Length: 198
Figure 1 (tube, one colour):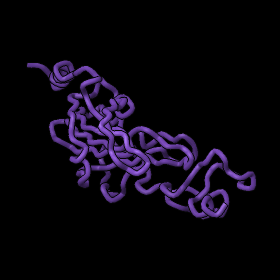
Figure 2 (spheres, helix red, strand yellow; figure 1 turned 180 degrees about the vertical axis):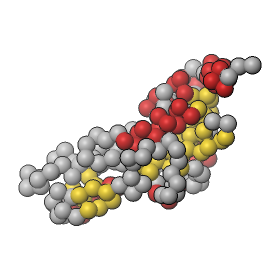
Figure 3 (cartoon, one colour; figure 1 turned 60 degrees about the vertical axis):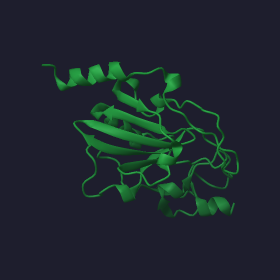
């Protein structure tokens, strides 16, 4: 009898598909309408290939309903940059050390991953491009008293930052780090209100 690790390795080999046939994404014009141009997301930006059990192609409309599970949101802190990639994802425990990951944004799709993969996703919560977290938890999908095992202990469920202009503490979702801050602001972080009033 093989071990669970042997089984997972077997599934990884069996279910691996050519990248071009995996997932599709839609591009949207400035008014939000979808085009039919398929774009293949870089799945490795979510989780390493070695942890993926299965990739599933889905219709984007399946993600229009509020997904279950614990959700992570990409925190866009540069207002002048349009980012092509994943805006959010949901991690749903399937049991037997398997997890479903639905992701959406410019790229969208569904993955089934193992426990090592979901732990890697959790590490995204500790990755910062600067003073503001790049990925944050959707606090409405997480029990603050009992967060999932894969969320690092150092991660705040509702992180905050301090505006370097008005010195107010705001939610990390309201913090910005624009490249073209006025020289009068002594620091890299500004709140949305100060940015709007600049």
